[in-house]
Length: 154
Image (cartoon, rainbow, N blue to C red):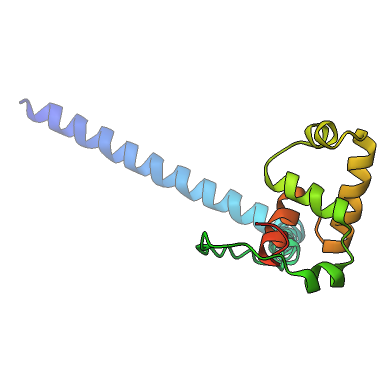
């Protein structure tokens, strides 16, 4: 290569590096100016971000459900079923309500239970609502599970 070319390349590199350093210096000065000029807004924004994050964390902590569902699986022996009459009297469950609970345990819908017992759908809904109140449950599946646990249905 020509010695003259090396000096040109050196000069180009020197000018490029010096321009990059000057650009870096200008950007740094501009950033310092912005930080000094808008320091209150920057601090207020940082505090707002911190408190927003703290609020979200606290809301997630407070709205987490306190109850923990534990599923316990047990093997029920296929022996002879004996109805717990004392529990039936304690809960004040009528014969018709027990019959409806037994049909619910078989997986029948309210309409199917009404057709089988020759009563109206509203009658079944009323008996089911009374049964849920007496057993302190909210859904059919809970009523069936509690009925089996309390030896009310097989």
